Image (cartoon, rainbow, N blue to C red; front, side):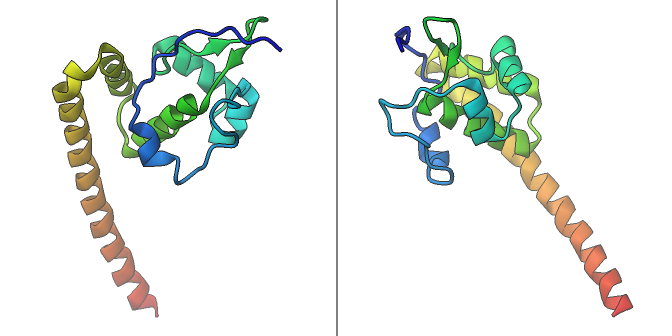
Length: 146
């Protein structure tokens, strides 16, 4: 099988440092050409979601085979794992797309990226505090019934 070689835009080289330990790549670099269904199975995302991510600009250019089928690589898996983490934070899709666009623009956008992540972190901390408060109420009620 011949794969069209194009230079992919690596969205975040350090993304693999954050996520690949949690979920190792199914194949080593150099042998990492995954179909969309393989990526869906690995990430838990639907094929529809993967196509949508590409359409809205959340995924950079995805390589294609000579027949036009998407071929993802380990860097794509790392990026998707990072995007999943951002989703868990409650970050809006529009903000994720903005972040992805900033990454594609290059290193000079570090301050903007950092600001976006800091704001997201503050929201996560606020949500954690709310959940801890809610947990305390539940624990109190559970103790009453014990």
